[in-house]
Length: 235
Image 1 (spheres, rainbow, N blue to C red):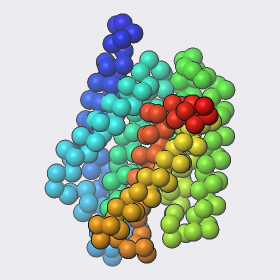
Image 2 (image 1 turned 30 degrees about the vertical axis):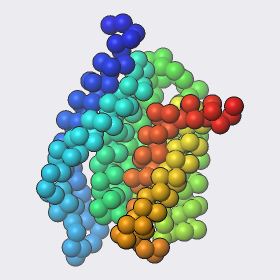
Image 3 (image 1 turned 135 degrees about the vertical axis):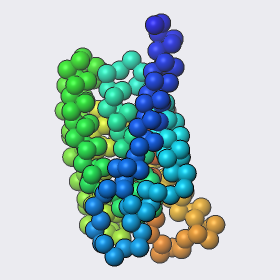
């Protein structure tokens, strides 16, 4: 396979795999444990929404294809693909329930820890130096989100804090700029979503808007264009 075909081939392969696995995400969502058994909106209920499977499959394929193209030729592509699949599930659940379940956030962190370590063993750039930086960023971003959640608990929950650790790990692997760009993009996207909802009359200034989807989209922006954005800003 020539260098010019690695990117498209990897993108296609990852898109197919993530699309197929995302098709089955409703099964995992349906069996999530309920915090409040009297809640009218249940995980089992949102898992059976009409058209959910194909919708998640399409989103998963698009996200996977983008990640596959971006990380083509790198051993860490598997780690980012797994995060992409879990991210699709987390984004949907948080949008519907305003919750980020531990059964998604914790595996995202643990899978990243194992798969990025495997990438370092395989000699993938940036190796063990990047792996150590990844954990530093994971801890730093988790602490930042924890402080924000304590200061403004109505805006951020512990699920967001745990997701921040997983995203910080993956973005920190790419470089110190990763968590910075991802966090900035997350708040920018979250702000734009809030403005759109206000203008459309679908929310008020006191409405709770889930932040998990914005965090995930911000992380995707950082993976795809973070290095270019950083270079542009520094220049």
